[in-house]
Amino acid sequence: MIHSDAAVLGLLFVILALIFHTASLKHSFWQKFYGVVPPLLLCYFIPGVLNTFGVISAEESKLYSVVSQYFLPACLVYYTLGMDFKAVIRLGPKALIVFLAGTLGVMLGGPIAMGIMKIIDPAVVGGEGADAVWRGLATIAGSWIGGGANQTALKEVFQPSDRLFSQVVAVDVITAEIWMAVLIYGAGFAARIDRRFNADASAIDTLRERLDNEQKVSQRIFTLYDLMLIAAVGFGATGLAHLMADSIVPWIKTHYPSLEKFSLTSSFFWVVAIVTLIGIGLSFTRLRKLEFAGASKIGSLFLYLLVATIGMKMDLVAVAENPGLFVVGIIWMLVHVVVTLAAAKLIKAPFFFTAVSSQANIGGAASAPVVAAAFHPSLAPVGVLLAILGYALGTYCGYLTGLMMQWIAT
Picture 1 (cartoon, rainbow, N blue to C red):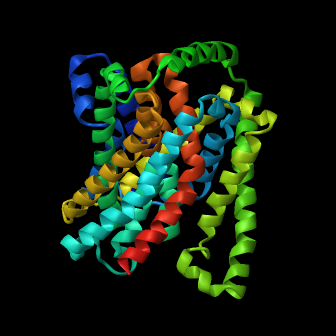
Picture 2: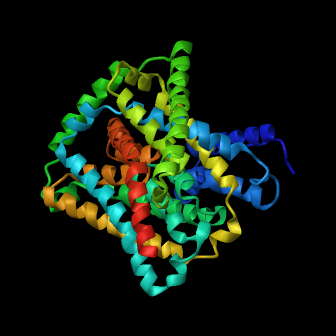
């Protein structure tokens, strides 16, 4: 019904604004509704409904290619730009150990879940070409280590079909949101859990006071110059990454064509890898202060637009065609939980670090602060810091996980 991309873009922004508006309302109906239906799922689902019923067409629209090629790399720069390695180190080794254990749990959980399901029902994790299930599951690894931007990056690298991607997005979002609800519920029993783990949580109080002071000092009103500089950094890095990828890929294809099986001939892989490294490098410079002018918030805006354009490609009929994928998702999540809790128990980490580290992996910057704030509002930045670390690792670790699942499949 709508053929103009300008009209589709406007419609997507209106939908996103309505979702955010209703999610912020204090009315009991909306609080109960969003207590059951995650806002992020609606950002995927509503554009998918419009596509399914022919209101918009993902096949005709060029929005996804524009957003994924230009806005996604800039988004990754903005997220990694704000990384404060000194602040991450100040969290202490326990937070980082539990976080990395959670990352390891995701990397191991994917191949393990796929191997178990291959024994139970090989058809669930089968498929050929773009419909090979491992390609779709590899994108979940990017999401559960980093976030939506990493997931989309791996989608471009491994190239699953749109039908398959619709299925794994549903598995990703629903499974992750259930685990997030468990973590928030567990925040109310943190003291009891800490006693069971023999963990000392006194450092959390000190950390909370320090973060309160840092936020008061760092916050400022952004200027037009700030916005111009943010745009220059994000899209300048994106342009440089595309320029370098255009030289790297032909060279690899000519001299090392066998590397194609590792997706190293994918131009987008190099774009994402390069912009992530640029973002990490800039985080050691004065440009990191752009985070206090809203760089990551602009990154989040780009990310939710990306989510909506991905949702346009969702085939709601296809989601119900392979329910066995949800079993894979549950097994995968259980492996992550077991590895994370085992590491926390071993080093006697407070439940706060366990919950936030896990959610920083599984939910990324959109939801890790929510879990952290469930313990205390001023602790939300801890979730952001760990989630940013996840963004830096997500594409690389997700890529390795995808290769392991490819090996399991073949």
